Amino acid sequence: MRTAPSSAELDALDDGALADRLHDAGTRLTAAIRTEVVGQDAVVEQALVALFAGGHCLLVGVPGLAKTLLIATLARALELKHARIQFTPDLMPSDVTGTDVIQDDPETGRRRLAFLPGPVFANILLADEINRTPPKTQAALLEAMQERKVTVQGRTYPLDPPFFVFATQNPIELEGTYPLPEAQLDRFMLELQLDYLGEEDEVAVVRQTTGAPRAAVAPVIGQAEILAFQGVVRRAPIAEAVARHAVALVRATRPGPGAPAFVGQYVAYGASVRAAQALVLGAKARALLQGRPSASFDDVRALAPAVLRHRVLRNFAAQSERVTTDDLVARLLAAVPVPRSAL
Image (cartoon, rainbow, N blue to C red; front, side):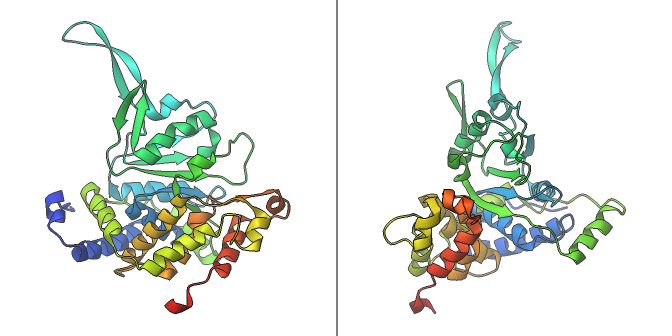
């Protein structure tokens, strides 16, 4: 049985030792996820980047690509409280946040209002098919995702750290769905696109899922370790040139003077400053996951599609010409190359 280190033990470690433990934890988490999820290597890595950077993730893909399975497996591999909400058109905000209920006080015999917490009061919240619920209910997550707290009937309740929202969305079945508000999309650190597996991976899935049931995934790391790893990610160094490159990529998504011509042609609104923050934090987490002490240009550019694809709003010209946000990000990476001084 795994013995989880205490917060005091982790506090006694220097950043180098914590970085080594983070790298090892990432390797063990990846192995645990691999027992249930076949393929999707880039998606698994980026989900761990969001985990250690303290960000939320939106997973987009057609049905049957293991979106929910990946999140559920990751939740089981962490010694954290997790909950799942199946978003439906009749879901109410109180079904997410909780509500006040009338209870009898056994000591006084009087009735009183008591807060009954909703499923958002977990460390990992799986928001399944998040775009199937109306905007009013979607908005119930805004405060929780940004400020890690919930306000109900004028009272504010903090959420226990760490807190992550991992949401899924089906991009092809649009009947009965509600587009996510831009304010909520911007709160997702990464949007991960899942695609069909290669032939060999698909054969492996069929064999794995039609045989004898496998043992349940055992917890790999717990709350204290995750919080310590998030701290070392924030303290990880990043060169001035790398941070400026992340900012340059984000600023180039905004139409106006200095932006590439195709941005003015196809983009209505560019990415916010949250995108630059996500690029820098994600680059740090990716570097430490791969056993490197500091973030590089490659880390920033590798995460650019996942950070920017849901933050760049296309205009009518892009939609009519079927220019996707991934197309725009690819052109952006070509238009904003790594500085020559860094080569």
